[in-house]
Length: 73
Image (cartoon, rainbow, N blue to C red; front, side, top):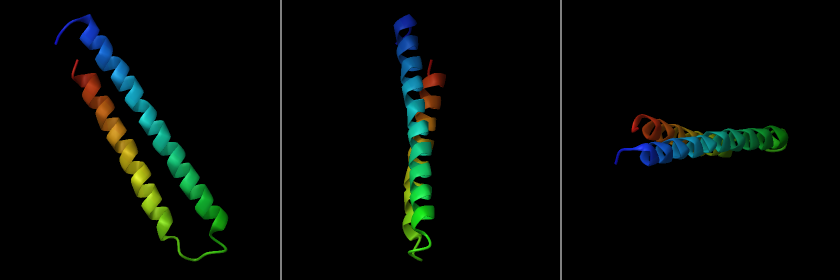
């Protein structure tokens, strides 16, 4: 598909995909904040690394989708 409508749709999709990166940043902040809050009480911190890994993976995926949609135009 070519034309103005296809370009508009791709750019809107890329803009919406960038919200995923913001969501990943919020997720990392929430996980790290809660771990720092409860770290003195509990010594097992493996859940922090799992939460950060999932949040960062979603952020990277959203970044790749945004790049794909922007350069597909």
